[in-house]
Image (cartoon, rainbow, N blue to C red; front, top):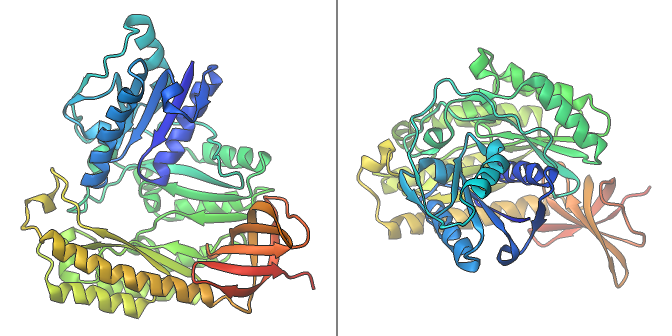
Length: 438
Protein backbone atom coordinates (compact mmCIF):
# COMPACT_ATOMS: atom_id res chain seq x y z
CA UNK A 1 0.00 0.00 0.00
CA UNK A 2 1.11 3.55 -0.72
CA UNK A 3 1.42 6.27 1.93
CA UNK A 4 1.62 10.04 1.50
CA UNK A 5 2.94 12.28 4.31
CA UNK A 6 2.28 15.99 4.83
CA UNK A 7 3.82 18.03 7.64
CA UNK A 8 2.74 21.38 9.04
CA UNK A 9 4.66 23.35 11.66
CA UNK A 10 8.08 23.02 13.23
CA UNK A 11 11.23 20.98 12.66
CA UNK A 12 10.26 18.66 15.51
CA UNK A 13 7.07 17.85 13.60
CA UNK A 14 9.13 17.11 10.48
CA UNK A 15 11.39 14.83 12.52
CA UNK A 16 8.37 12.94 13.83
CA UNK A 17 6.89 12.64 10.34
CA UNK A 18 10.16 11.14 9.12
CA UNK A 19 10.05 8.70 12.05
CA UNK A 20 6.52 7.56 11.20
CA UNK A 21 7.43 7.31 7.51
CA UNK A 22 10.26 4.94 8.44
CA UNK A 23 7.89 2.83 10.57
CA UNK A 24 5.59 2.38 7.57
CA UNK A 25 8.49 1.59 5.20
CA UNK A 26 9.86 -1.05 7.60
CA UNK A 27 6.49 -2.80 7.37
CA UNK A 28 6.59 -2.81 3.57
CA UNK A 29 4.52 0.28 2.78
CA UNK A 30 5.65 2.55 -0.08
CA UNK A 31 6.07 6.29 0.45
CA UNK A 32 4.73 8.45 -2.39
CA UNK A 33 4.80 12.16 -3.17
CA UNK A 34 1.35 12.34 -4.82
CA UNK A 35 -1.55 12.26 -2.35
CA UNK A 36 -4.00 11.36 -5.11
CA UNK A 37 -2.12 8.10 -5.64
CA UNK A 38 -2.01 7.15 -1.96
CA UNK A 39 -4.00 4.50 -0.10
CA UNK A 40 -3.16 6.25 3.18
CA UNK A 41 -2.56 9.99 3.81
CA UNK A 42 -0.82 10.95 7.06
CA UNK A 43 -1.12 14.62 8.05
CA UNK A 44 1.09 15.81 10.91
CA UNK A 45 -0.81 18.83 12.21
CA UNK A 46 0.21 22.04 14.00
CA UNK A 47 -1.67 24.32 16.38
CA UNK A 48 0.98 26.88 17.39
CA UNK A 49 -1.13 29.66 15.82
CA UNK A 50 -4.80 29.93 14.86
CA UNK A 51 -3.75 29.97 11.20
CA UNK A 52 -1.71 26.78 11.62
CA UNK A 53 -4.71 25.12 13.25
CA UNK A 54 -6.96 26.23 10.38
CA UNK A 55 -4.51 24.96 7.75
CA UNK A 56 -4.29 21.62 9.55
CA UNK A 57 -8.04 21.09 9.31
CA UNK A 58 -8.04 22.30 5.72
CA UNK A 59 -5.31 19.81 4.76
CA UNK A 60 -7.20 16.88 6.28
CA UNK A 61 -10.29 17.76 4.21
CA UNK A 62 -8.18 18.27 1.09
CA UNK A 63 -6.68 14.76 1.39
CA UNK A 64 -10.18 13.27 1.50
CA UNK A 65 -11.34 15.30 -1.52
CA UNK A 66 -8.32 14.35 -3.62
CA UNK A 67 -8.94 10.67 -3.07
CA UNK A 68 -12.19 9.68 -1.32
CA UNK A 69 -10.91 6.11 -0.96
CA UNK A 70 -7.79 7.05 0.99
CA UNK A 71 -7.49 6.45 4.74
CA UNK A 72 -6.79 9.83 6.35
CA UNK A 73 -4.60 9.77 9.47
CA UNK A 74 -4.39 12.91 11.63
CA UNK A 75 -1.57 13.19 14.12
CA UNK A 76 0.24 15.98 15.96
CA UNK A 77 -0.62 19.04 18.02
CA UNK A 78 -3.83 20.21 16.33
CA UNK A 79 -5.22 16.69 16.50
CA UNK A 80 -4.31 16.43 20.18
CA UNK A 81 -6.14 19.68 20.98
CA UNK A 82 -9.30 18.95 18.99
CA UNK A 83 -12.30 18.25 21.20
CA UNK A 84 -15.09 16.66 19.21
CA UNK A 85 -15.33 15.65 15.55
CA UNK A 86 -12.31 15.62 13.28
CA UNK A 87 -12.10 15.00 9.51
CA UNK A 88 -9.95 11.88 9.65
CA UNK A 89 -10.36 8.12 9.92
CA UNK A 90 -7.64 7.75 12.54
CA UNK A 91 -6.54 10.30 15.16
CA UNK A 92 -3.19 9.89 16.92
CA UNK A 93 -2.36 13.19 18.62
CA UNK A 94 1.19 13.75 19.96
CA UNK A 95 1.76 10.82 22.31
CA UNK A 96 0.99 7.76 20.20
CA UNK A 97 2.63 8.39 16.82
CA UNK A 98 4.64 5.20 17.17
CA UNK A 99 1.32 3.29 16.90
CA UNK A 100 0.49 4.70 13.46
CA UNK A 101 1.06 1.48 11.51
CA UNK A 102 -0.77 -0.60 14.11
CA UNK A 103 -3.79 1.74 14.06
CA UNK A 104 -3.93 1.68 10.25
CA UNK A 105 -3.82 -2.12 10.16
CA UNK A 106 -6.50 -2.35 12.85
CA UNK A 107 -8.67 0.02 10.77
CA UNK A 108 -8.14 -2.09 7.64
CA UNK A 109 -9.07 -5.28 9.50
CA UNK A 110 -12.09 -3.92 11.36
CA UNK A 111 -13.59 -1.25 9.09
CA UNK A 112 -11.68 -1.03 5.83
CA UNK A 113 -13.81 1.65 4.17
CA UNK A 114 -12.85 5.24 5.09
CA UNK A 115 -15.50 7.85 5.90
CA UNK A 116 -13.07 10.54 7.14
CA UNK A 117 -15.00 11.12 10.37
CA UNK A 118 -13.76 10.52 13.91
CA UNK A 119 -14.39 11.80 17.39
CA UNK A 120 -11.56 12.90 19.66
CA UNK A 121 -11.55 13.97 23.30
CA UNK A 122 -8.95 16.52 24.33
CA UNK A 123 -6.80 14.95 27.06
CA UNK A 124 -5.70 16.55 30.31
CA UNK A 125 -2.09 17.78 30.55
CA UNK A 126 -0.11 14.76 31.70
CA UNK A 127 2.26 15.04 34.65
CA UNK A 128 3.50 11.47 34.33
CA UNK A 129 4.29 11.22 30.63
CA UNK A 130 7.34 9.41 29.25
CA UNK A 131 9.48 9.99 26.18
CA UNK A 132 8.21 7.94 23.24
CA UNK A 133 11.27 6.46 21.57
CA UNK A 134 11.21 6.46 17.76
CA UNK A 135 14.70 5.10 17.07
CA UNK A 136 17.02 6.52 14.41
CA UNK A 137 15.27 9.04 12.19
CA UNK A 138 16.86 9.66 8.80
CA UNK A 139 16.41 13.18 7.46
CA UNK A 140 15.88 13.60 3.71
CA UNK A 141 18.26 16.59 3.72
CA UNK A 142 21.28 14.38 3.18
CA UNK A 143 24.07 16.05 5.15
CA UNK A 144 22.26 17.60 8.11
CA UNK A 145 20.14 15.58 10.52
CA UNK A 146 17.68 16.84 13.12
CA UNK A 147 17.66 14.85 16.32
CA UNK A 148 14.96 15.21 18.96
CA UNK A 149 16.11 14.71 22.55
CA UNK A 150 13.11 15.93 24.58
CA UNK A 151 9.42 16.71 24.35
CA UNK A 152 6.96 18.90 26.21
CA UNK A 153 7.22 22.20 28.06
CA UNK A 154 6.63 23.30 31.67
CA UNK A 155 6.67 27.05 31.05
CA UNK A 156 3.01 27.82 30.24
CA UNK A 157 3.67 31.22 28.66
CA UNK A 158 0.40 33.18 28.62
CA UNK A 159 0.03 33.06 24.81
CA UNK A 160 1.13 29.48 24.14
CA UNK A 161 -1.02 26.38 23.68
CA UNK A 162 1.91 23.98 23.15
CA UNK A 163 2.27 22.73 26.79
CA UNK A 164 -1.36 21.60 26.55
CA UNK A 165 -0.72 19.83 23.25
CA UNK A 166 2.66 18.33 24.10
CA UNK A 167 2.42 17.84 27.87
CA UNK A 168 5.13 18.31 30.48
CA UNK A 169 8.87 17.99 29.87
CA UNK A 170 10.09 14.46 29.16
CA UNK A 171 13.69 13.65 28.28
CA UNK A 172 15.05 11.00 25.98
CA UNK A 173 17.38 8.33 27.34
CA UNK A 174 20.96 9.48 26.88
CA UNK A 175 22.16 6.12 25.53
CA UNK A 176 19.47 6.22 22.82
CA UNK A 177 20.55 9.73 21.81
CA UNK A 178 24.17 8.69 21.40
CA UNK A 179 23.17 5.51 19.58
CA UNK A 180 21.16 7.56 17.07
CA UNK A 181 24.02 10.04 16.61
CA UNK A 182 26.45 7.18 15.87
CA UNK A 183 23.97 5.64 13.44
CA UNK A 184 23.51 8.98 11.65
CA UNK A 185 27.29 9.38 11.36
CA UNK A 186 27.57 5.89 9.84
CA UNK A 187 24.93 6.91 7.27
CA UNK A 188 27.03 9.89 6.14
CA UNK A 189 25.42 12.76 8.08
CA UNK A 190 28.04 15.34 9.01
CA UNK A 191 25.93 17.79 10.98
CA UNK A 192 23.43 17.20 13.77
CA UNK A 193 20.88 19.75 14.96
CA UNK A 194 19.95 18.84 18.54
CA UNK A 195 16.35 19.91 19.07
CA UNK A 196 13.19 19.51 21.10
CA UNK A 197 10.08 21.40 22.08
CA UNK A 198 12.04 23.08 24.91
CA UNK A 199 15.53 21.71 24.45
CA UNK A 200 17.01 23.70 27.38
CA UNK A 201 14.79 21.64 29.69
CA UNK A 202 16.50 18.39 28.76
CA UNK A 203 17.04 16.44 31.99
CA UNK A 204 14.74 18.68 34.03
CA UNK A 205 12.24 15.84 34.57
CA UNK A 206 15.07 13.81 36.08
CA UNK A 207 16.13 16.55 38.48
CA UNK A 208 19.05 17.80 36.37
CA UNK A 209 19.85 21.28 35.08
CA UNK A 210 21.31 22.43 31.80
CA UNK A 211 24.51 20.51 32.54
CA UNK A 212 22.62 17.44 31.23
CA UNK A 213 22.36 19.05 27.79
CA UNK A 214 26.06 19.95 27.82
CA UNK A 215 26.94 16.37 28.72
CA UNK A 216 24.98 15.06 25.73
CA UNK A 217 26.59 17.57 23.35
CA UNK A 218 30.05 16.62 24.64
CA UNK A 219 29.36 12.94 23.93
CA UNK A 220 28.09 13.72 20.43
CA UNK A 221 31.26 15.74 19.79
CA UNK A 222 33.33 12.60 20.42
CA UNK A 223 31.58 10.62 17.67
CA UNK A 224 33.74 10.06 14.61
CA UNK A 225 32.13 11.37 11.44
CA UNK A 226 30.07 14.10 13.09
CA UNK A 227 31.74 17.37 12.12
CA UNK A 228 29.17 19.94 13.26
CA UNK A 229 26.69 20.30 16.11
CA UNK A 230 23.92 22.89 16.29
CA UNK A 231 21.28 23.62 18.90
CA UNK A 232 17.61 24.38 18.36
CA UNK A 233 15.75 27.27 19.98
CA UNK A 234 17.07 28.29 23.42
CA UNK A 235 15.66 30.16 26.42
CA UNK A 236 17.61 33.16 27.85
CA UNK A 237 17.50 32.25 31.55
CA UNK A 238 18.61 28.67 30.90
CA UNK A 239 22.02 29.72 29.54
CA UNK A 240 24.38 29.88 32.50
CA UNK A 241 27.95 31.14 32.30
CA UNK A 242 29.23 27.60 32.93
CA UNK A 243 27.06 26.20 30.14
CA UNK A 244 28.20 28.84 27.66
CA UNK A 245 31.82 28.25 28.68
CA UNK A 246 31.33 24.52 28.13
CA UNK A 247 29.89 25.13 24.64
CA UNK A 248 32.88 27.30 23.74
CA UNK A 249 35.19 24.33 24.43
CA UNK A 250 33.40 22.13 21.90
CA UNK A 251 35.38 22.34 18.66
CA UNK A 252 32.44 21.08 16.56
CA UNK A 253 29.81 23.43 17.96
CA UNK A 254 28.47 25.99 15.48
CA UNK A 255 28.16 29.57 16.82
CA UNK A 256 24.57 30.06 15.70
CA UNK A 257 22.07 30.74 18.49
CA UNK A 258 18.31 31.10 18.27
CA UNK A 259 17.47 32.86 21.52
CA UNK A 260 13.75 33.46 22.04
CA UNK A 261 12.85 37.07 22.90
CA UNK A 262 9.11 37.53 22.15
CA UNK A 263 9.16 41.14 23.44
CA UNK A 264 11.68 43.77 24.49
CA UNK A 265 9.25 45.37 26.95
CA UNK A 266 9.47 44.28 30.59
CA UNK A 267 5.77 44.89 31.16
CA UNK A 268 4.81 42.78 28.14
CA UNK A 269 7.25 40.05 29.16
CA UNK A 270 5.61 39.93 32.58
CA UNK A 271 2.14 39.62 31.02
CA UNK A 272 3.51 36.88 28.77
CA UNK A 273 4.73 34.97 31.86
CA UNK A 274 8.26 34.95 30.48
CA UNK A 275 10.87 34.46 33.20
CA UNK A 276 13.33 37.25 32.28
CA UNK A 277 13.56 41.00 31.78
CA UNK A 278 14.96 42.86 28.78
CA UNK A 279 18.17 43.63 30.72
CA UNK A 280 18.60 39.95 31.67
CA UNK A 281 18.16 39.02 28.02
CA UNK A 282 20.83 41.56 27.01
CA UNK A 283 23.18 40.18 29.70
CA UNK A 284 22.78 36.67 28.28
CA UNK A 285 23.65 37.97 24.82
CA UNK A 286 26.75 39.67 26.25
CA UNK A 287 27.88 36.36 27.77
CA UNK A 288 27.36 34.61 24.44
CA UNK A 289 29.26 37.28 22.50
CA UNK A 290 32.16 37.11 24.93
CA UNK A 291 32.48 33.37 24.26
CA UNK A 292 31.52 33.52 20.55
CA UNK A 293 32.53 36.95 19.14
CA UNK A 294 31.45 36.17 15.56
CA UNK A 295 28.23 34.36 16.42
CA UNK A 296 24.95 34.55 14.55
CA UNK A 297 21.97 35.44 16.74
CA UNK A 298 18.37 34.96 15.62
CA UNK A 299 15.17 35.32 17.62
CA UNK A 300 11.35 35.27 17.69
CA UNK A 301 9.22 38.35 18.38
CA UNK A 302 5.45 38.53 18.81
CA UNK A 303 3.80 41.75 17.60
CA UNK A 304 0.48 43.05 18.84
CA UNK A 305 0.36 41.05 22.07
CA UNK A 306 -2.86 41.81 24.04
CA UNK A 307 -2.78 45.29 25.57
CA UNK A 308 0.61 46.10 23.94
CA UNK A 309 0.94 49.89 23.79
CA UNK A 310 2.91 51.86 21.21
CA UNK A 311 5.45 52.67 23.93
CA UNK A 312 5.89 48.99 24.76
CA UNK A 313 6.36 48.18 21.08
CA UNK A 314 9.04 50.88 20.78
CA UNK A 315 10.83 49.31 23.77
CA UNK A 316 11.08 46.15 21.67
CA UNK A 317 12.43 48.16 18.74
CA UNK A 318 15.05 49.75 21.01
CA UNK A 319 16.19 46.40 22.40
CA UNK A 320 16.52 44.95 18.89
CA UNK A 321 18.77 47.88 17.96
CA UNK A 322 20.81 47.37 21.12
CA UNK A 323 21.25 43.61 20.73
CA UNK A 324 21.97 43.50 16.98
CA UNK A 325 20.36 40.29 15.80
CA UNK A 326 21.21 38.48 12.60
CA UNK A 327 17.57 37.80 11.80
CA UNK A 328 14.17 38.19 13.50
CA UNK A 329 11.29 35.77 13.03
CA UNK A 330 8.26 38.04 13.40
CA UNK A 331 4.82 36.74 14.37
CA UNK A 332 1.65 38.82 14.74
CA UNK A 333 -0.04 37.65 17.95
CA UNK A 334 -2.39 34.72 17.35
CA UNK A 335 -5.20 34.16 19.83
CA UNK A 336 -5.33 30.60 21.14
CA UNK A 337 -8.42 29.59 23.09
CA UNK A 338 -7.53 28.08 26.45
CA UNK A 339 -4.60 30.40 27.12
CA UNK A 340 -4.47 33.30 29.59
CA UNK A 341 -3.79 35.84 26.81
CA UNK A 342 -7.01 34.88 25.02
CA UNK A 343 -8.99 36.46 27.85
CA UNK A 344 -7.19 39.83 27.56
CA UNK A 345 -8.19 42.87 25.43
CA UNK A 346 -6.92 42.26 21.91
CA UNK A 347 -4.94 44.64 19.70
CA UNK A 348 -6.55 45.49 16.32
CA UNK A 349 -5.12 43.34 13.52
CA UNK A 350 -4.10 46.34 11.42
CA UNK A 351 -2.01 47.67 14.35
CA UNK A 352 -0.34 44.29 14.90
CA UNK A 353 0.36 43.95 11.17
CA UNK A 354 1.84 47.46 10.97
CA UNK A 355 4.18 46.69 13.86
CA UNK A 356 5.13 43.42 12.20
CA UNK A 357 6.12 45.27 9.02
CA UNK A 358 8.43 47.54 11.01
CA UNK A 359 10.22 44.56 12.53
CA UNK A 360 10.38 42.66 9.26
CA UNK A 361 12.13 45.62 7.63
CA UNK A 362 14.59 45.72 10.54
CA UNK A 363 15.16 41.99 10.19
CA UNK A 364 15.93 42.25 6.47
CA UNK A 365 18.43 45.05 7.10
CA UNK A 366 20.14 43.05 9.85
CA UNK A 367 20.23 39.83 7.81
CA UNK A 368 21.69 41.59 4.77
CA UNK A 369 24.35 43.36 6.83
CA UNK A 370 25.42 40.12 8.50
CA UNK A 371 25.73 38.27 5.19
CA UNK A 372 27.75 41.12 3.67
CA UNK A 373 30.06 41.20 6.69
CA UNK A 374 31.64 37.96 5.44
CA UNK A 375 32.94 39.57 2.23
CA UNK A 376 36.72 39.16 2.10
CA UNK A 377 36.76 36.62 4.95
CA UNK A 378 37.65 32.94 5.06
CA UNK A 379 34.95 30.55 6.26
CA UNK A 380 34.09 26.87 5.90
CA UNK A 381 31.02 25.44 4.20
CA UNK A 382 29.31 22.08 4.49
CA UNK A 383 28.37 21.38 0.87
CA UNK A 384 24.81 20.12 0.50
CA UNK A 385 24.32 20.35 -3.26
CA UNK A 386 26.60 20.52 -6.30
CA UNK A 387 25.40 21.21 -9.85
CA UNK A 388 27.19 21.90 -13.14
CA UNK A 389 27.26 25.47 -14.42
CA UNK A 390 28.52 27.28 -17.53
CA UNK A 391 31.92 27.87 -15.91
CA UNK A 392 32.29 24.62 -13.98
CA UNK A 393 30.23 23.84 -10.89
CA UNK A 394 28.11 25.67 -8.33
CA UNK A 395 28.00 24.16 -4.85
CA UNK A 396 25.72 25.40 -2.07
CA UNK A 397 25.63 24.95 1.69
CA UNK A 398 25.95 26.76 4.99
CA UNK A 399 28.83 28.03 7.07
CA UNK A 400 28.98 27.55 10.88
CA UNK A 401 27.00 30.78 11.43
CA UNK A 402 24.25 29.36 9.17
CA UNK A 403 24.74 31.82 6.34
CA UNK A 404 23.85 30.42 2.93
CA UNK A 405 26.93 30.18 0.70
CA UNK A 406 27.37 29.57 -3.02
CA UNK A 407 30.74 28.27 -4.21
CA UNK A 408 31.92 28.56 -7.81
CA UNK A 409 34.61 26.05 -8.73
CA UNK A 410 36.14 24.29 -11.72
CA UNK A 411 35.69 20.88 -10.11
CA UNK A 412 32.65 19.36 -8.49
CA UNK A 413 32.49 19.07 -4.71
CA UNK A 414 30.92 15.99 -3.19
CA UNK A 415 27.93 16.79 -0.93
CA UNK A 416 28.89 16.14 2.67
CA UNK A 417 32.33 17.68 2.19
CA UNK A 418 33.42 20.62 4.33
CA UNK A 419 35.58 23.06 2.36
CA UNK A 420 37.41 26.28 3.21
CA UNK A 421 36.30 29.18 1.05
CA UNK A 422 37.01 32.85 0.55
CA UNK A 423 33.91 35.05 0.52
CA UNK A 424 33.89 37.30 -2.54
CA UNK A 425 30.54 39.11 -2.44
CA UNK A 426 26.99 38.95 -1.14
CA UNK A 427 23.53 39.94 -2.32
CA UNK A 428 22.40 40.14 1.31
CA UNK A 429 20.97 36.62 1.36
CA UNK A 430 23.66 34.43 -0.18
CA UNK A 431 27.43 34.80 0.14
CA UNK A 432 29.30 34.03 -3.07
CA UNK A 433 32.58 32.22 -2.52
CA UNK A 434 35.57 30.60 -4.20
CA UNK A 435 37.65 27.73 -2.88
CA UNK A 436 40.49 28.82 -0.62
CA UNK A 437 43.15 26.32 -1.61
CA UNK A 438 46.26 28.27 -0.61
